[in-house]
Image (tube, rainbow, N blue to C red):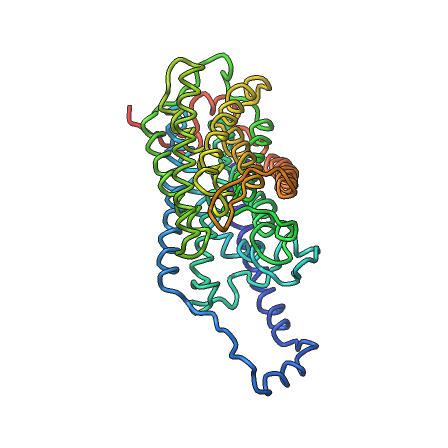
Length: 470
């Protein structure tokens, strides 16, 4: 009965959240806007006095705006269709639709949640102060819930804030979608939806706020370098995937039967789309069309090519044949690892990061997974979790000399700062993921599909359709 009731329950919960936020917006915001600041009289005097210099007014740069619109589309392209096809090809044919639907549904739901309250929790800066750690260093307030006081004329840096909101929305979309690969082929669709809602609210939005909301945010105060999402996206999702695959249990036949990909071409096509889309992910994180974005573009390509080639040769040497799935997976490992460093390293650093990520992620996805026996179906932890950790730590070691562009490898304070952010993200995501999965299981009567559904395939049992005609 709980499974049949989950859709109206889910929709009703969203409606209650919406009504509550609307009530808060109409009352709380009006009060905040009406309350005079203690410094208001002094500010009025200052405004009346002749200004020594004209106040700088934020203006929109058309070139930056055009680039960021393109970058936003590229990042959305990474989830649908890129990630969907990459994961879809790796599962068995009876479960391809379940993966596609989960990615599509997550895209739809996170879009709504981001507008309702996600953007505010991630980027609202009320109560933050440079160098001070307080509650708002960990999570934003609801000052911009329902995108209150934001219009087409509101500026963020040199681009319209609505473009920045949409760009960051695409990051919020792909991060929980990445987790799908860890529990593929065996988790109830209803449980996936509830877990996604809770994890997005209590793990993604806070970690995003800590890393990217500016002065006073926790990671900003520590001095963490995370240009495009090593902690926010990949470690966050990778740890959630590890917790989820352990809690949901192994697939039927794992370790005894061949659970091979049903369509390697789809996986390679999906990985290729991810590679292309990742330029929006990394170069777009500069939020401007400038030299830093250009360097991010270059190092992303270099690290990815290096990782793909390295994985190919490692697999060739250890397994006897270089596989298409291995080549595609190696490319994704390189994309993941260069993400936090893409705004601060050069091409030589990118080669090091690409090679290191391929070797270490290959070891994690094969030897470590086999040793401990967890069924991370599509290697979310092995590639995104471990790759994110490798990239975040190497970001702290690689230093580019501003005078001549040369790169140095340094083990110093920045490495410890990066390590703190890694450990913090692991702990935060792990705890939130465990609790969110427990709640999802309590609501829908367990997070795992029953044995008959798993045997038949989730395409038919969850969605009443098949991916391919017989």
